[in-house]
Length: 170
Image (cartoon, rainbow, N blue to C red):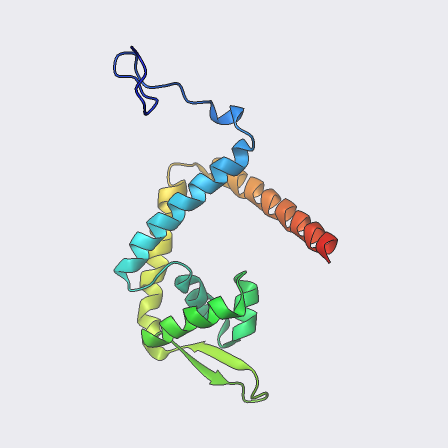
């Protein structure tokens, strides 16, 4: 007999898997797989410097743009205010960020990078360089440009579709 209950074969070799292009949404499947692996690797690398995925994005935004409104950080990074609040609280606990009321509007919470976080900046940049090398290190310049062009087009398409879906739901 070739089949086992798990669907694998001891005598006939592994069961044939459907081709990736035979599945519905092969590009979407590929994006999900790559994004999952990228996030896993980022998590491993960021743990070395004391951060979790997405915390480095907050810090990069603060280092580059200076103090930000909490609500603006949430919008820029595509998350909700509650999630951003928890992320900033964790960064505060690590000594990397601090919150304070806006000097012009006490209802607004401002977030800024601490002086102590500046030492972390070079480490985060090294993590992103390592991620970039892992993702695209084997690509030549033309391939890299092509990937960026295609990803940009996909992002624009998704943003347009999301806008239409939100409009339809209102």
